[in-house]
Image (cartoon, rainbow, N blue to C red; front, side, top):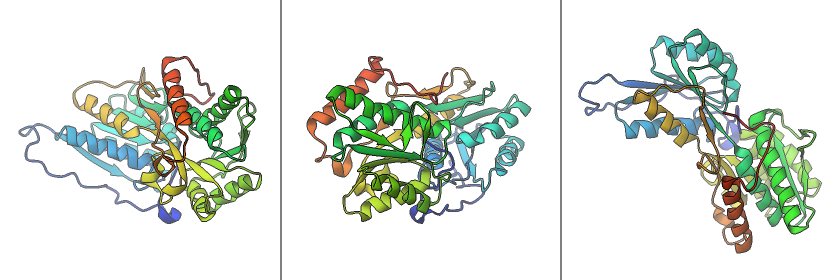
Length: 355
């Protein structure tokens, strides 16, 4: 999901130095060959959001490890008004590859790219539809379908819940897949597990209208728990930490499905996390930068769409729930992955990216 998520302990966005981490000097950088510069602009979540921006930056770091002729740096946007300014700043610095992170940067990236048609841009979680912007998008509905089936199978109350940060495609795509996974469980098992917080048919549901404030996340999840939900999937960035913290404080009353980055790596509440619906942003970014540095021109079509078949999306390990999830349910969740990848099961969402 994403957009402006800030996932850090305490819910604060940690300010990053404007120029990011200085690239290490490397005396073996191609015998004096011109360095290839890859420059990233974060959205307002900042580099330490433990989510989108952190993942994209990891991709740049991995690209540099694979090709020591690549220089990397980033600038952290503190407000949405900074997006276009920061992108243009990197154009003026003659960066070879400029990466924008998050769907909220789509308009600014489109404008900057249209004004600089010879500049190579990339963007995570959006497709502005401009030839020189390489889009990296993720069909998270597929992995969320697995998570919904899993949650339905693990719910003792027969009620699960989800909520979002804002009603925008990179958020609702998770909620659609989750609801369909529950529906598939009900159909397969002749059960009636309810989904609270989201109605796929009407596209209406619960939202915090914020991706940072943990109190807002806690408030919404408290309401879902009061209605009987014992598993909740927040798709609200840092606001979702209000849910994981409350779940931990509840002493096992309910558990959580996290999104974007494995919650056992990105939150302090691993013990309450059933699984995470993961976007493999680092590999997508790494591959794009390595291709561009190798001389390949990356264009908007076909771009990249991560799915279960190409490992662009997945569900994380069960971690502390490993012994609690029945072997039969694990096998069914694995088979769903194979069936979706093979096209036997089709997952649909109005929010799905298209090539």
